[in-house]
Image (cartoon, rainbow, N blue to C red; front, side):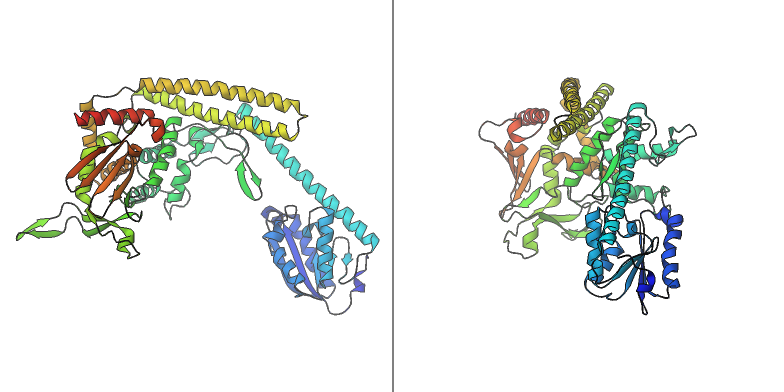
Length: 567
């Protein structure tokens, strides 16, 4: 029923509801139009008891009802808290841009709960506790459907426009947006150029990460030396920013288009290569990303000392809890031996079952002296744990690594593109072009797979092994660095060793008798360590690299060096 406002009599209490899809709309004519709702209520002599604004919420996606103020108001109305009041809106689309059925259901639920609705743009009243007459209902359905179609068309145009810009960027390198990473700027020709000072800092951060420093330590280094942060110089560098930077493929020139799905930003197709000027080699980027997994496994203290390099490996043989490190006295403190005073050069610490220490049910009271255990382990397996990949490679190897990294990314992107095209064809098999494109992309992926396998084979052949003497010399340098007076050198060396241990040590079981059983390469070799005593136990049965789940080259290197040690 379309009433004149005089049909609503008495002293009315009004609730004003305004909504802006974007903050920019609030600054423009949308704000002016919705101000009319307030002026309208005032002109009618209604007392405004609530003035509700949803900023940045879309009525087409229904976000204003899910996460906005309208959802709270709707719950209050349905609970009967606003019985007898009138909801004043500038236009019906402020309330809903869903389809006509959903909009009708929303309006009916409000008026049935004792609240009238008025749209000030056309004077339309939906009066409380009264069914909608046929004309009013038809008008509502027509208007709401028009609003919904307009929103859908706008969304489609935006998607199509973004798709066109994305394809232009992929085909021609045309810049999609002026926003770029912090080490680049857009010049007058709409081309990204490198800010060399910032690019040099990015390269330094990657070098620190490759050397074994975690994101927290890198941020600490930058803050301690007073390196100005890019966004907020007062707050300094954060580990979260370092993490995002080290995982940002824009450093190797890629741009990853995205789109919003259910309120979340997801990838929109494959990354666009060579969109930005690359400031990092693809090989270095791949190595840093891969080493991040190793750093996650190193759960010990992220201090400059990295006290426990066996954190996460050493476990109680009886309850399977972690063996925690207990520090009884720090390095530098004094101690007396037979009346003579000495200064401790290392921490007086031991490995103890954490469950026993917490009195949580385990009776394994063994305490394994940490410093001695670390020395024995370094004597026995450090030269095995560290291999050629832990040291700087020659130029030809670096070039092949770069080629492998780039081919791996190309193969992954082609495989993903083929998968998406096949899925699109499966949804509509009448689109023959989709099938043909999928077949072409699949053939491209197969070609890249062959090139990738060939490049990997070339890389394996190109990795020349240094002599045993040279290898032991470089291992000794790393070991010296583990106890360096320089905290950065010490941390880098201990982080490198901690990560390399995880490439061959499967677990370390500590039992009640004070023995630590060290399983190497999934059981290829086991060592029983107690104090300075080491007993080696060979594995039984046929063991291969595949059965152990380790790299073939690592398997060959372990067996070669172990067999040499036994001679």
